[in-house]
Amino acid sequence: MEEEYAEGQSYWIPMADMMTGLMLVFMLVAVSYMVMVQQTTTLIVQEYETTRQALKQALQTEFSEKLKQWDAELLGDMTLKFKNPEVLFDTGKATLKPEFKLILDEFIPKYLKVLNSEKFKSSIKEVRIEGHTSPRWTKGAASTEEAYFKNMKLSQERTRATLEYVLSNPDARAHINWLRQVITANGLSSSHPIHIGGLESNPIDETASQRVEFRIVTNSEERLAKIAESITETKNEFK
Image (cartoon, rainbow, N blue to C red; front, top):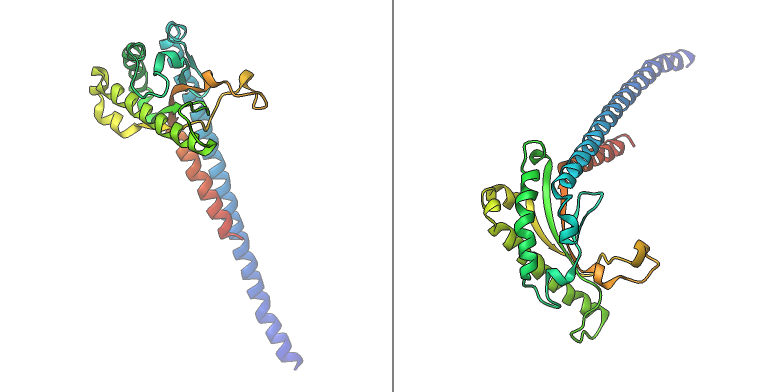
């Protein structure tokens, strides 16, 4: 019996050593992969920040003399906001006012000059035209929910009208195939109101909430999302 036990024990010891070795190999592979992912993520973040800063500076240089005239603002995330509702649309209407058309006539060629340049074109994933309304609805909405959906319909109609006007511009027609791939119209109703003083605890600024924004999305965000998904899958494999 002792001899059989000794033989069995001698059999399991190499097996245990092999399993330990395999575990160490798996751990080494996992650690190496995580290090590689971390390095790649750092490079993408650096690339994104560099691109963002360069693109923001290019937009600032291109529009610095026009922003005040247009009553527009360039935000830190490269969003260009047209913030005077009296210039954009009549109350409750989706037809672009002549003043807004004149602004877009100046804006579109300059905007495309930056985005379609060799330096930035490959980094652009999406150009979002976003329409925002205030929560108020003056045409007899029976409830807050009804007002929300009426504002949603209005904001969608306004962004679609803006998109149609943008794409009708001669400079846009010259890049129409590319623009059709990247530009979208997004009506957001009153989902993102602006509060007085920028503090959510303050009342909503109804006038400032009514705006049209041109928002740039770069492909760096998509690449980072894929890496995050890959990291999650790898962690699950080693659980």
